[in-house]
Image 1 (cartoon, rainbow, N blue to C red):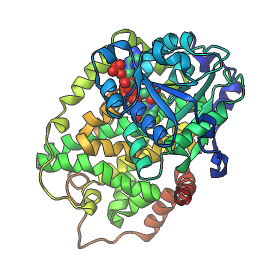
Image 2: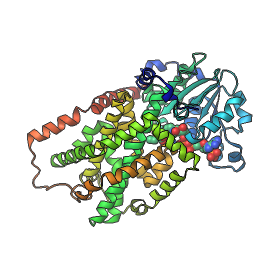
Image 3: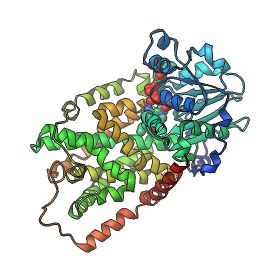
Length: 491
Ligand SMILES: NC(=O)C1=CN([C@@H]2O[C@H](COP(=O)(O)OP(=O)(O)OC[C@H]3O[C@@H](n4cnc5c(N)ncnc54)[C@H](OP(=O)(O)O)[C@@H]3O)[C@@H](O)[C@H]2O)C=CC1
Ligand SMILES: CC[C@](O)(C(C)=O)C(=O)O
Ligand SMILES: [Mg+2]
Ligand SMILES: [Mg+2]
């Protein structure tokens, strides 16, 4: 199998990378009808499998789960997830031959083996679905010609897919039909119905391509979404300890700080997050983030380049072939970091204090979101997609750190995201070593500035506000957030 993206002509690469249209809510007026009464079988019952299945069943669809025989025999967690929630569970032989739609929600590493096993059992004209296109785009998996191949990719962790649905809403979702596998022309209707089933249509759906999803998803998760949050957590924590801040306080400031400051960003973009700081602190955060952008830009560009050329996927697949040696070593090392091992203290930290004492964290978030967005859009990924994979998803990942630190984040995200996160983190920490030497508690751990002297230069403040507000991620973000709010009352 050859990397599918690399087999495309430049023209086709650019066409598929640039495929992205924000769909109107009227385009979902048929609801789940294209899937109503169809036998839908999900392979795997993990982070995405369980939560997508629960939503689709609540939306009136016929859902059952197929698991590998060992998972059923040993009553593993996936078996418990499915059976405790009242779903029928069976082997591939039991369920796949009657399935109209097979949804592959196993880890990316397993896709070639799983798809090779289920494909011969699938009935003629059935549909195979993914929530991430790695297998098709990076591994070049060829699917039987009579099968339709679609993708419905929620832009968030599985836990949020369920929580948002229960709130009567959904999470932004990207849908796609593989151009090589749409023999009956039904792929789009089924993908739309699936997005309605998970609640994705209520939050906004991007009509995209397998290629655009893979390249943007990999970039987001490696850099701002997971990689930089991991690097930032470790560096900020270690700096506070070096400077004598109470370890319990430092641990708490980081663990809950990302969630709090990115909540401000969720509502009003980088502009609002920065506006939560005092004027002198905002100017300092802007200066730090400019410096961070200059230092980290080549690393963000390298990740984007390695994703585009297939170098990243090639090296990760080498680790798959090596029994995940790197992944497992890096996972264990993360568990040993001082931040991970220091419990959060009992100090009360007010919402505003997370901003005031976390100026460096604000600067890191701004730098990371803008750099990721810039690297993606410079490479032909459309702004809407780049927004979801940078600014939009950062607060959702920050929530996982608030639950149980980096361990929880890396458990909830896919193994593919986890691998890329460590790769970025290992390159980024040394890159920021000199920068961190100049950092003290004025920007992490203690309030910035002197409460008695809050004066700033007007012209400088105006120029900074303009730069923040006019960044393209803010322009597209304001539009997308407005349409998400407009969609909510339709529910
Ligand atoms: N994690 C997330 O939030 C997101 C994930 N995605 C994508 O969704 C897909 C699923 O990822 P995720 O939910 O993280 O996966 P998980 O690791 O959470 O779940 C994997 C499931 O697959 C089963 N499984 C593992 N290996 C095999 C195998 N060889 N054969 C059959 N079943 C197997 C596991 O069961 P058992 O081991 O018991 O057999 C488990 O039920 C991936 O393509 C991922 O990129 C997309 C968006 C976000
Ligand atoms: C950010 C990581 C992710 O892409 C996701 C939750 O969207 C993943 O692969 O887990
Ligand atoms: Mg993702
Ligand atoms: Mg991913």
